[in-house]
Image (tube, rainbow, N blue to C red; front, top):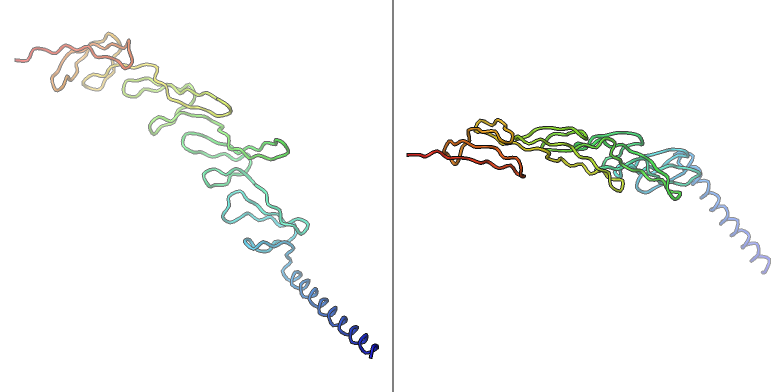
Length: 204
């Protein structure tokens, strides 16, 4: 009776080992058919050495290495768009460049301003460039503070505007519209904003 139990146990163990063997064979067969060694529920299967960009997350890249799925960044994310290292792009008046820096054993991808410019209205101006608008002369002032560019249009001169839209400097006399009445005015630019010293003629 004892001998029979031993025989049954051996048969049962052999059956369990056979099931496990066929299960492993089935898994190996499935892997060999797909060629995949890494798997992710969101992106699917990857083969060894394969690199895949995430379909919805900018600059997020997957690498299948030694049967392990590694997630790495691959560039600079700017307004939801991925830019590769050393690539340049325009946003508003600024030209940006994707730069990579190493700090504390960490890789940092930084969107740096390569060419700082001032925005005034719908136009862009270079550092130090001057322009005139409504008889005012402006310049583009660029200052770098704590690694960040501050670009600001600064008015450096202001002149007076006559009835026809022409500009006049300090001391000039010109025709002007004083609340619907033509008058002669003298431009005074000693204050900001400029002042109009006007003499309204006697109206009968």
